[in-house]
Structures are given as C-alpha cells and as structure tokens.
Image (cartoon, rainbow, N blue to C red; front, side, top):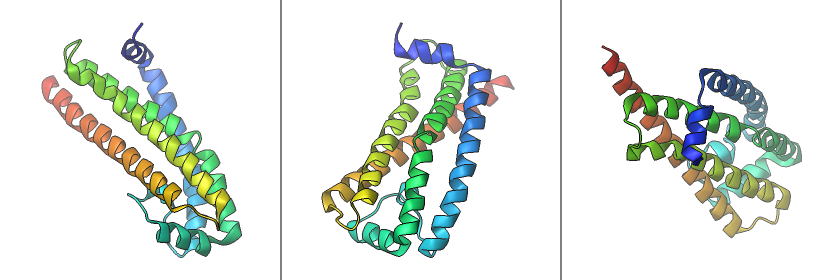
Amino acid sequence: MKLLDRIKKLTTLRFFLLFLVLTIVVAVAMGYINSQILTLSGGLPVLDIRPGYTFPEVEHLFTVLGEHGRRLYTMLQVLDLVFPLVYGMSVTMALTGVITRVLPEGHPLETAVFIPILGMIFDYLENITIATLIASYPNLSPLAVSIASIFTQLKWSCIILALALLVILAILALGRKK
C-alpha cells in the first residue's frame, strides 16, 4: 500500500479531532512557557517562531535569556518534540480530507498532503539544531545558526503553503456544495 493510500485510510474525523485537540493542548502548554521566555527576554521571540535569524540575533537572545531562560527554552524544546507531530498530522488530515472531496482520485495535487509532513521534518531538524545551539552556548557556531535558520524558513514555507492550499481547497469545497 502506498503512503498516500495509508494517509487517506487514517484520515477520519475521529483521528483528525484527536490530533486537533492534542495540537491545542500542546500549543497552550508551549504558550505558557513561551510567555515566561518572552518576559525574561524583554519581548524577544524564540527562534522557532521567527521567519529566520542571524548569528548576532541568536547570541543576543541567549545572552539576554540567561541560564534560567535557556533552561526554559530547553523545556519548550521538549514539548516541541510532540508539537510537530500533532500539528503536522492535523494539517495533513485536514488537507487530505478536503483534497479527496474536491479533486478526482489520482489528481497530481493529491501529493500536496506531503507538504505538512515535509514541514514536520524541517521542524524536527530545526528543533535538533536549536537544542544543539542552546547546549553549546556561549560557544555558538555561525554555521549551526545558519543551518537552524534555514530549517526554520523551510518549516514556515511548508506550513504556510499547506495552510494556504487548505483554505483555497476548502473554499472550493464549500462552493461545490451550493
């Protein structure tokens, strides 16, 4: 059985709602820790939610956070082991559900369901590099910062593209019901 067929088989309302609820729960927990980090950093956002970052920005953030803030960021990274999976599956299932309703079987756009999965992969690569950066502070590697920033940019590109497709296809699906 092809991976796309497995994804279609897993795409049920029950699984979608389960992953959606888990996404919300993990996001709330991450938001709580993130608010503490924002307070410690004077409003500087964590790297994961930025569109990209430079070596001086990372160095400044980690310095301003101090040891306690970097420990909090590490706790956030632990929760971020679960988050890509739950949001990625939620978006994948939503996209799969809409695609199967709007497009005929075998349409080339069916492969778009892999975009959020690709985003999950980039998110995990981002998390690994950011965790490495936190652990190596103050001996940050400019190359590691650049790689982490590229993974962050690729993650956000996939997420934005997947959500844009989801919205467009959902509008098409609603238009067909009328």
